[in-house]
Image 1: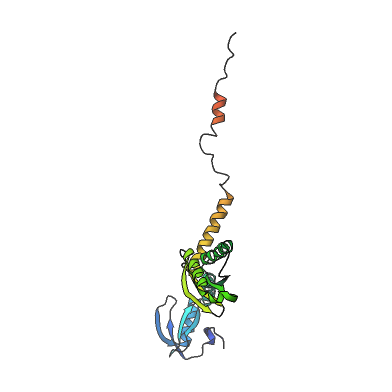
Image 2: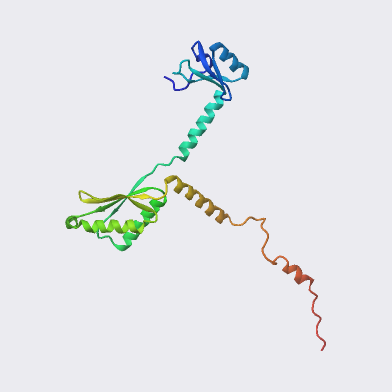
Length: 220
């Protein structure tokens, strides 16, 4: 079955509860009268509540209504932000340089408004030292606390220990800030406009030099 409402001659009921073009209640009228009013206003008769008794119909420009509805839905999809869960894997005895690199990725993900799943991978005898992984996760959470918070506390999962960090900012806010920063960088690269006047008295200096009288040679 079509999801679109019935309009004009496709409406098959003896009478309808009619709503005018501006939302005013006209009342219950015969279908023929409603169609006559629609033709008089150069509008469509649209069934907006088919299950009501009698069905509710409204006078409107159905083509314009469909276009505006499609544009609103498109804008809503454009502004909708899906939170993505990124994953970062670390070893309990990670090298300081590698830790800084991994932390940089976590910072970038949180700034983008994404959640981050941190996985500590234990191997061999490391499995008997879960406190190493716990301390590492706590350290990382502390290092990025201005950007994110612990959404899921560290917990053991087989040979791994997992923690989830959530961003303080929503995805939509992060996207908006990223667009603003990109626009600012673009404006900075373009530099000042060609019509900008030079600062200071640099433009007047040559003219002043031209007006100054030439010095006469001194007499021997």
